[in-house]
Image (cartoon, rainbow, N blue to C red; front, side, top):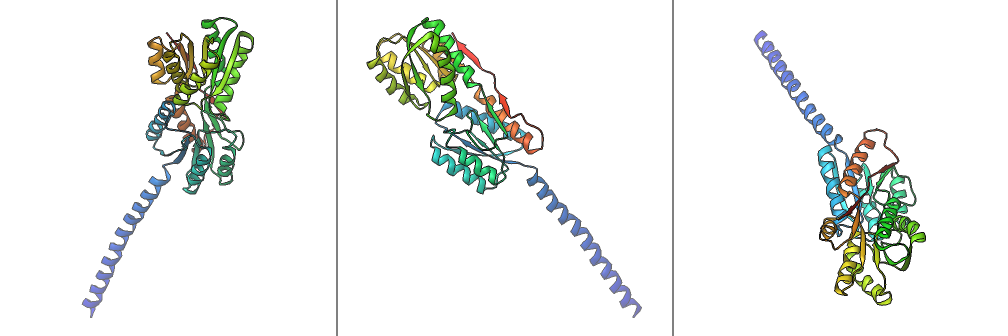
Length: 307
């Protein structure tokens, strides 16, 4: 009888020991799994278009910084469509991302999407272009007004006071187009005669078509300021095809534009450093999510690229 009791006691002890060894191990695994997932921030990034070298470079910078900081970046391409961007932002909200970075197609139209994220308790950071409404943690961009002024002053130095020029505008409603135009026209108002002003939607092929039309109606222009390099390069194609000698200044310093400057075809371009903008946006996002204070406006330095 005593032997049976002893065996039962030993059996009970073995069962308890096995349980005590298994429980901590399983709890540790669960905690480790939870800890790993909770330590990785999920950031949504709604970008205006990936059909533009500037924004491709900006996105590359954002993705590289996210990988460096251990954040998960979910990128959605609005394809220059404000309605699609609104839908994309709603999808990111439904996915439960921790923060949304938005590079607006249209600064006015994006307001509803920003407010929707605000209502869901998801912080928003705007990148390169601002939002006209809603609460934003931070805005990371170059000073587009200053860049427009820089381009205007450079164009005046090349074509002279009172010269007849044209302006190719970006996407109507975007803060970049509005601000670059504002800066350029501050200079042009006293120093140039803007004979033609027309949108080409930041697009190279539209820049070509618009410039062809401008040359037909204003054959005597001597200079062009384009709100971005894609339009500038399109305008340059039209000018070269027409056999004209017209000074063109762009904005963004994309690889193709810098090459055109080095070849002496494009007079100059304003460098915005898109990779740095993308890096700084993700850095600000992670700092904000970590509870650190982030500046409401983070400027990125501009530079004039010329021969």
